[in-house]
Length: 83
Image (cartoon, rainbow, N blue to C red; front, side, top):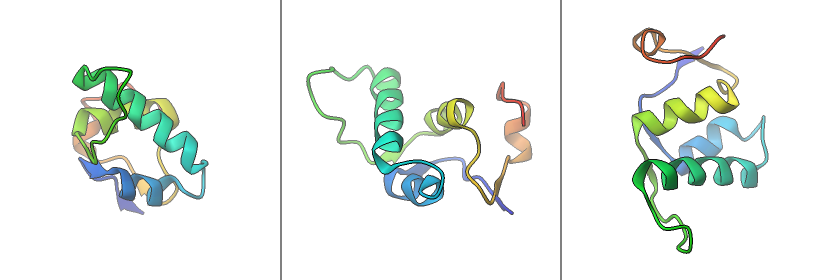
């Protein structure tokens, strides 16, 4: 198993979760999290590609770990996720 990265891009996130979720669901989920964390207006599309570490942790908390990835030990003390 590969350790989950601390931050990533939308493209890599789609690759990691592609076998578990529909691309549209992944994009909708991460765009909502990005918009919420960065206080972006709802009327504009989310054009950010880079996913910050706290946004990735929130995505994992809501949708679970992608198949083939393990939780990094450093995260275990910083995230409320049961695995």
